Image (cartoon, rainbow, N blue to C red):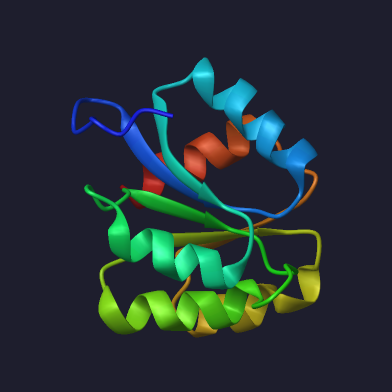
Length: 126
């Protein structure tokens, strides 16, 4: 993970507890203009890491079902101290789509993801 970026790449913060999905993100983003600033494996870790990031991410990819604190609760906490955060929920639970969009999430993508669709959503938000 690169931590020195504020270049032309798009900086992401990934909140995901599934190691297979994390590996997929790393592999896919390596071939696009995406830089992964950091990764958190649960909501509590996401809040702490987000606060400590040297550069705020352009976009946060947030899972919903995670240990310790789910993505919705982590989203709410992050938005309390950074109301400008751009968060896309990426979840296998489509039932949360309308709710997360109603509370301000920038978008929702259901797993399994299509990397081209995710890429387009990220670029559209920016």
